[in-house]
Length: 465
Image (cartoon, rainbow, N blue to C red; front, side, top):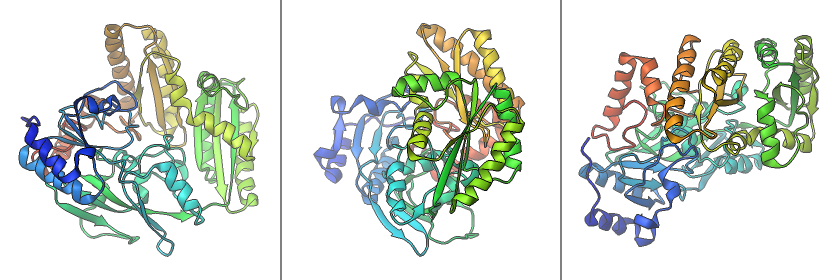
């Protein structure tokens, strides 16, 4: 695609609608805007703008469409696949200043807010009304629009589902600049195709989200976590289907291995409740009474002990829960701190294939002489597998990461898994998705992209292009 390079007239237009203080060029653009959290893909925008309302977004998109200028909408930049990197330059819209909570509707159990509100702010705000927003991705400083664009899942997905399940309505600015409202406060909707669900998970390639209506539920009164050590990962993972079939409905079922726990201890400077075993399951149960929760976790504890668990640690105080979950939340940064660079494989496989996939990654460590660390959501089969660069040269790293990733994604296909469980495709994982889905599926995706964005100006080069 032949995009226009920005010139003085383009900057003048942007200043005319935003003012000089919200338009940045050249050295005035912080390098953070050239990459996301993973950092492997980097490109500076030609101009960075801060938008404050839907009208400004609409005017920018209309101008960009008329002038063939690529545009990328950007939130906190916590993504891991390069989805918010402006690989064709152009305009980057910083959405983080659109960060108002607009309305809480206690009758309809909805929260209306702008795209730049942080996930951590949502949870804190709604709890004051005895309400609950269940999606719980690990990165709490992500914006809600970023969560929607990747259909983020997180640790509570086992019981409560993923972001898409909590989107009632959206206001979206299309690449043409037109403003579209989809969904609303209604609970049911069979009115035509679900455009709302297409936007959710589209990684900013179909439209720019400017307003969101979230579904809320009543806040569970109590929560208890279990930390369960096992002699090895196979025994831990093989217990998960039995837990799910027990109908005890854990909120979260996480798996972790000792080396990641040790990294988190060093990174945080505080001890995990237990680090002596090779593998652990971490489960949470919530409900409205301690009796209800006790019945659920006692049943699961007995299942785990029968399957060879070494112990069951009950974390029922705020201090214990904070020690466990702060470590779990720090795993990514902790692993990152142990190496010079890394990249992630965010595959999802059937629950009963998790142990088989992790065993395979252990074999790959020996085959390719590279460190691999993993943790993830055992309850839904979503694995976060990190390949570490360590002392490899840039050239050797590029070669090795390509070989290791090809092996892992090939194994994922063999196990009937998919390329991404929650972090998306972006730029980094396109080749693996295209290889898996096949030409018919990919062409349907490209047709959808063309229907929304015939000039291909919105976040071009991502997902299916």
